[in-house]
Image: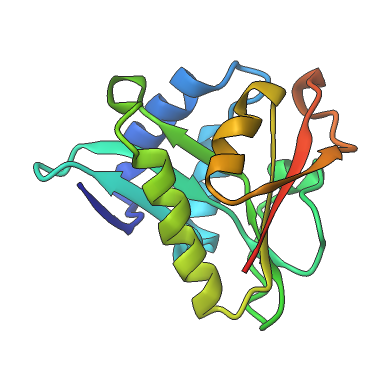
Length: 162
């Protein structure tokens, strides 16, 4: 298993995995992922098998806000690569065929290295309640219910201090 920067030709596999892991109201669109690949190259990582099969991905901008806000999912978000920001994880997704093999945790570790390289002070994300234990095992602290109404779900803010 290797983790690399995203390439534009990864888009079909990214969309496939995104739609396996999220319902239609939650999932990002083709246009959003094209913009993320273009605008977030430094913080868009892909997990691959040795034969280059995409098994999962993680992506998000570096910004000054403390938590993810709903507009970040809709906009062509760009990173503010200034020191001291927060890396916001918009999506972590692993192909269900490859789940349970530590790929999600490896992607979180790799994105933390990227965040440290850009001198971020923390990483933040939102998740559904059933995913909180996974993130807590990876060093994130549950900060309580988020203000988000994305996809009409109840989301929770999680933060990892670097």
